[in-house]
Length: 446
Image (tube, rainbow, N blue to C red):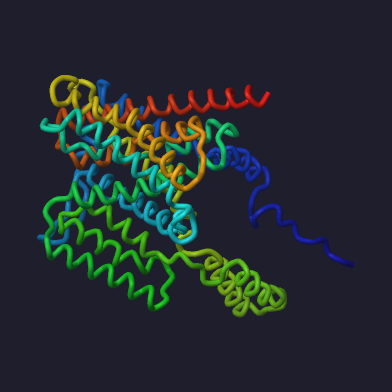
């Protein structure tokens, strides 16, 4: 008498009804997280909460929260900083680590791997950085806010891709690829600007500590160590070295991302081969041998993709739905009565808004058309204009640079308000032009 095959539709010891209810609750959340626009929605929600909280009767609680001390005390030694520091200088290191991983992947096998393919997005990114900075300086050179020229140079990729996702099929694959590639190069430019122009004087001891930690990372790579946890200690040391050196410590994340291996050990074919060699023996394997074989299969599974791809897959949701919204909550709380739309702060406001809303699309469109003309290609103005407009969504990186460019006070509050206004305007303009271009193309096709 043959026994019925075991029911594997439920985990062992699970209550069927409860499991089905949980699945119904979780499935919509999973679908939501799978939508590219979702992280942009999370950022908007966090920014609105922060803005409302900072201008509510409970505004003192908002300021109190981010000034709460947090740190480590061991005997007479203490490293204690406000919660705001741990968000901006600590958690944002993970954000920059993901940026470094994306740069590493694109340079190794993406749109930036071949000079010919990288030429157009490189030109677009360069134009999209220089034009906003030039517009900002034209309005602020010689005034108190001149140092904020880097604020309108950046693009927030999560917001920008989210706006394109809202346009759906009206956005071509070429537009998405161009935006993603130029955003990666834009991030590189922002990183260089932060390192060279928004860092304090360099301390030699801290720099030596950072270089030593980099050597530790390279030594682990040469030894063939693949476990991510093994790199935590040198990563923290690198972060501390940059902090002491006077360079913004979040750049440790970029360096670590760039040092992460971009080649897989097994690859898809190796995974299939290694797994097949063990699967046939699993049913009859004794318990100890079973665990050994399962460990081997797990290693092959983990190494079927490169460490860069594996870490991006694991950390992207954490950054998109954790780190970035928390950063927005901590930094988008602009007290409107703290902003000043007169004198130097007004120039900062106009410089940031004009730089992002006008300078970004102008620089991207002109540079893209010039690069394609030199390369013999052609580009329709409306599609490139849509990419340029959503490129004016600065948000996360622009606010981050504003925090470095200005001390607490009217200039900083006004700069952050300008970033919020400009990012909202660029989003609406991108949606409007994208919808118009799709309708115009459809009518011509008809």
